[in-house]
Length: 209
Image 1 (tube, helix red, strand yellow):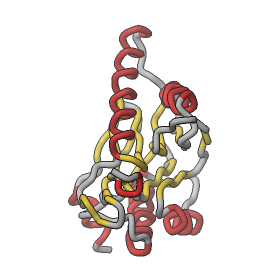
Image 2 (cartoon, rainbow, N blue to C red):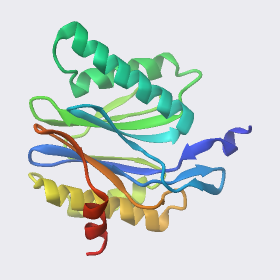
Image 3 (tube, rainbow, N blue to C red):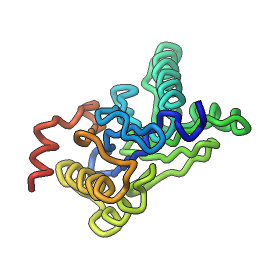
């Protein structure tokens, strides 16, 4: 199969740091060339009880790395008798990506979680790590989502405010980016209470505003 016809998540994913949590959200479209191949594709994953990540890129590559991340997180906890930190997971995935930079995984991650405070990182296909103090964006709809976040993000947002802004940013990209779309929007929240998925009912209520 030619490269341009491989299954990809064209994608818009966003991550926001709120007052006591981090929110990650994404659209749900996967594309095959110029075809909207899947409208219910998962792009937000719970890795541990304190870490969530979003994915953009080649579906096969990103699913492989998500499995690696979950396995390493379990091993880390068994060996060290403590939860893996977001920074530790970022370092692990960064090393894999950089070691394969000449035959790279076609992926980009946003990784958010709780350590002493909420943390958010962007991970590039060659293993580059960017720590984000406010928000991060990845995927083909980056420009549209970032415009919304630049305008409306403020530090110290409450969780519900950050969820609404994340949904608003992804929605803006879905309207203008042909590779972003899908049935709805998926979002997860990581806080000291653990990780929870924002319900479809909550998402629908925000979209109807």
